[in-house]
Image (cartoon, rainbow, N blue to C red; front, side, top):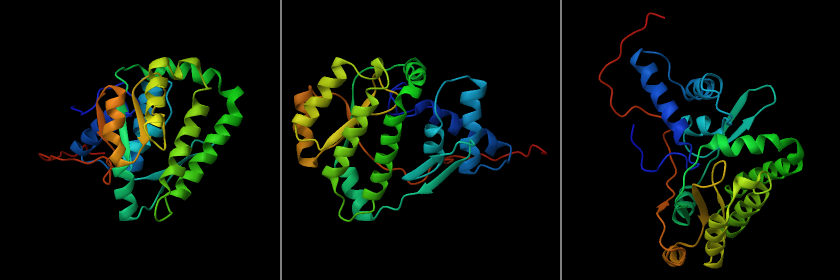
Length: 243
């Protein structure tokens, strides 16, 4: 397994490995490899077999392609709804998005265990974030995209997420975030459980170089939207399991 970013950075790398490995194993036995099957079985592997106290969003995010709205229902069913994005909107979103590496990694379990214990006291915050997500889906349908509005939504959700546990943020993350906003970013948030990893900014393309310079030129990556989901890139033949 190879990757362009380090693990433990809030980008779902462990779930990407799980989904990819499961896809390869199932394909080698001639078994069905739908996105839904890969997501469901990866959830079982990570949460039930490996006992990781994590959510299900990464497995479904990796297995299903493109932008989507994922609904996690109380009866443990999951609905994945594609979010249509006009070609010009996709181009604009990719051009004005930037992932900035904070320089540190962590195990998601360490951060999530503290958040989980505080969830009962944060129901109003969770409901607000859910509303922001719905508003973001609606905003993605606008043409042209209102990128400043979408940036403010990212920042609003980040401010709420920070209240879930003390270790979600730290002074280094706060400094990078504030520098991004002061450099002209429309908004941003830390991805994943928190504590370290990548900050996602919505920032005008022409201001990105200056923003990174003011931050001390940390590693940064453009946002490229996936359109395939998990896929096999080499197949040397499969064998049937007889099931």
